[in-house]
Image (cartoon, rainbow, N blue to C red; front, side, top):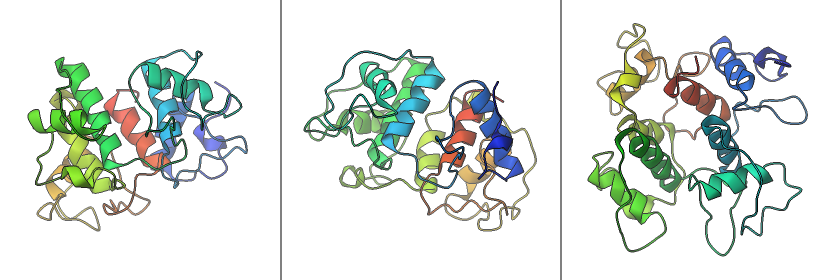
Amino acid sequence: VVGTGASYKDVASDDNQEAIEVLQAVGVMVGDNNGNFNPDQNVTRNEMAVIMCNLLGLKTGGTHPFTDVPASFWGHTYIIKASQANLMSGVGSGQFDPNGSLTLAQAAVLAYQIHSQANGGTLPDAAGAWYMPYYQYCLDNGIFTASQFAAADMDRQATRFDMVTILDQAVPASRMTAVKTVADGSIPDLRESDPYGDVVYKWYRAGVVSGDGEGRFNGSTGITRAEVAVILCQLNNLV
């Protein structure tokens, strides 16, 4: 392996550094052309396409219909394969929106991918917006309820609370076994009795998330690159 997470100029957190090093070593995630990992930036649709392709071992190459992804774009070939494998789709009018932030709808798609691969589920027919089959799949399979996430809200950006709540119900229980002790109150900004507290503490105890440098979960904020790196490592048994 050429370089490690420690070689990234902007990665200093010991907690995240290990996960970043593993993802780089197995070829799932790499930094930018300036030698930075950019851990506190939100993950774009294009970057998630790269992650999903690398994670699932998809080769690159081919053509695609997206007018906003030229051949010179650094994520071009990954977007092709993510689209061809039905892992990610466009946003309409021939656009992929490669630099857009992930939304609740896209989180629902990821939940579908995780859950259906583990359980053999298929998408139902559902009228309406492009995400409605994924939304309906999540409803049908108990991943979330309409009172938790209304269909009308699917276009908004997902928070950390949203992402953990959605994916927790999609991930097989065998991947969420507790591997460490996290006492109630040890997460500075959240108690186990608080809203979302039970699922967040479950993910901390499973070693999937560890919070920021002070252990805070910062649940109302968006998902960052470093946080996604940790989640992908842990959920897919890369560490």
